[in-house]
Structure formats: C-alpha cells, structure tokens
Length: 410
Image (tube, rainbow, N blue to C red; front, side):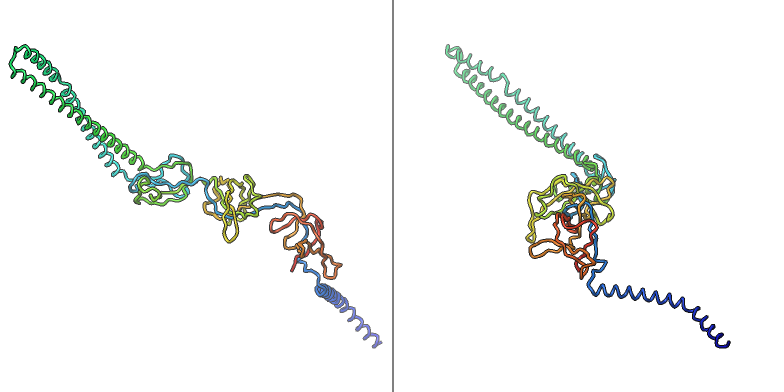
C-alpha cells in the first residue's frame, strides 16, 4: 500500500507539469524551424523581401524639368522725372496699387520757385518782344515817309524851270541836295526797319524759350507727384522720406530708383532645356510647377516662349524656355526657385517598372529579374520590350504582367 501511494504521488506530479512543458517545446520548435528556414533560404541566395517591387499599371507621364526663378510677367522700375527730396511715401512693399495712384511726393518748394522764376522770365521776354514790335512799327513809318517823293517832285519841277532859265542854278542844286538827303534818310530808315524786324525775331525766340522753360518748370512741379503707371504690386521700395532723387531726364538709366512694381498675378519661370529634349517642347504644353516653399502644392502652367537660339556651356547646349503661371492668390513670390515639369506625353494604362530594375546586356537588350521561388537563387531573368521613360520609371510593352514581382539589383 505504501508503494502504491508513492506511485500515485509521482504520477500526480507528472500530470501537473507536462502541459506547460509541451507548449514550450512546441514554441521552441516553431522558432527554430523559422530560423532554419530563413537561414537556409538566405544561404541559398533568395532575394531580400525589401528588394521586391510589383509591376504596376498606371499612366506614364513623359516630362522634362526646367529649373529657374519665379518672375513677374510685367515689371516696371519707377524713377522720377524731377530732381528733389522725397517728402511723402504713400505705399509700402506688397501693397497693390492702381494705375494713376500716387506713390510718392517730392518737396515742392524749390520746384515752385523755379516755376515763378520761369514765369517772370517769360513776362520779360514778352515785354522785350513788344518793344521790338514798336520799333518795327516806327521804322516802317520812317521808311514809308513821303519826304522822298516830295523832294523828287520838287527837284523835277526845278529842273524844268531851270531849263527855261526861270530859276537860278543854286536853287536847282538845293532841290537836288534835298532829294539826296531824303533818299539817305529813307535808306537809313529801311536799315533800322531791318534791324527792328531782326530784333522782333530774336524777341519771339526768347519768348518761345521762356514759355518752354515755364512749361518745363510746370512739368517738373507736376512730376513731383509720382504715380503708378499700371495696376501692380509694390515689389521693392528703394528710398525713404528725405532721400535725394535724381531725374531720369538728366541722369537717364543712372537716375535714382524709387521703387519697383510688378504684376505677380501672372508670373513665369524661365528655365533651360537640353537640346536633346527641346524638339519635343511646344508652345502651350501643360506644365506642373513645384517650389521648395510649397512642397505639397503643384501649380499649373503652360509653355509660352521657347528661345530660338541655344547657349553652350561645358559642351552642353540648352535652350531657354518660359513657362507662364496663373497666380491669383499671389502665393508665388518673385525670385522663388521653381521646377517646371513640362508634360511632353501622357500614356494611360501602362505597365511600369523602376528604371533601376532594368538590366542591359552588351547589345543593349533589356531584361529584368522576376522573383521565382523555384529558381535556385529565387530569380529568373526575363527579356522585356520597353517604351518611354521619365527618369524614374519606364514603360514595359512586352514581357511582364501586372502583379509580377521583380527583383531590384543589389
């Protein structure tokens, strides 16, 4: 009885500990088996799952990227037509201004003084002209005096009487002398008339010059108010109150830049396209614009200009291409760096594989490695026929099906 009792106790202990031990053994076996399978698979050269990519079907977009900076379609540099000192500034950077709106005003005191001086000079010139006209009138009267005709008739009568010996020779000489003196006086009057008329011409010129000076001074005074020529946004303001300003009429291109206006509701990107791609770029092609400032936003644009002449640099010839962009919310700012992706062609429902998965042989034939668990190394090389590509993915015309898994090269 004692032996049987001990046996039961031993058997009871075995029942208590056998089930957990069995569970642990099963788990250990599974883990070991998985480890062995993985190790043996890797040892056999099967591809890493991270190197497998599926063949996908989707649209193939063939494009070329032109990188440049955002620039306004219209840019105007505002410079003053008058010299002076900035007295007031009515706008600041990023303000939207309308055509004719006052942007800035110069100090008018000096300009008003110039206008008063010019008007005074005009009055003096007009007075001098009136005096010259009076001299002409006087000289005309003297030049048209009947004294010569009277002297001539007296002399002719004296000659007739002298021929009949009715008057003395001295009387005849007196009439001749009177005629000569009258003719001398007429010639002198005619000379004075010519001088007076020349003075009138000179006086008229002085009046015209003085009047032009008045108009110029009035224009300078009006130019002291600088207005916007177009509806635009203030891009830069290059002066402050109290800054001296030189006139564009005097200094030309070196005149003081007051501010720069630009219409940024319409902007463009000017980039460069390689000569190998420029033949497929055309006016009106759609474009997708991306910027570093808005990484999650794509702006729509269109090609509006293609340069007819290329530029060579480092043995590479490129052509300038302008892409216009609608920017109604003014999100795009001038001088932002932008990438303009010009859409050359869109092919819907294409089989696509990564460019890096394609292998070329010595004859430039194309292949990919298709995942095949039955193959010794888990891959099978398949020849394919490719179509167009965009640098990252390429179209497959023959050799693959959607869902095939290909192995990327190590």
